[in-house]
Length: 131
Image (cartoon, rainbow, N blue to C red; front, side, top):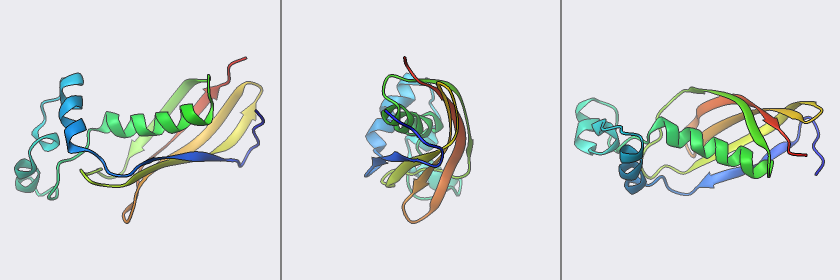
């Protein structure tokens, strides 16, 4: 496969963030924070009116986008910045673009966007292609 600086990466779309998945992830992550499980707690804290997706799930969406764009590759480095929450029912899209290529290493910028609200996470990653 051929890659060029400036290439857009195929988006990874989640049509509706699942509150049921948040319950499963709360167990996997050992994260009992009630903002992921109880909408009444979210309301009481003034954070909205839907449960809030765990940060690691949001990062996983972006990782899935990267791994789908570069089959068989490894994410060598990745950092991201949380800018806003993702709520149950949100439609999210992870997208990115190639910003540099150095042999088998490809640097990308990426973001996670919520339809109607904009970017909620952004960052950069270095991908090492498989040979």
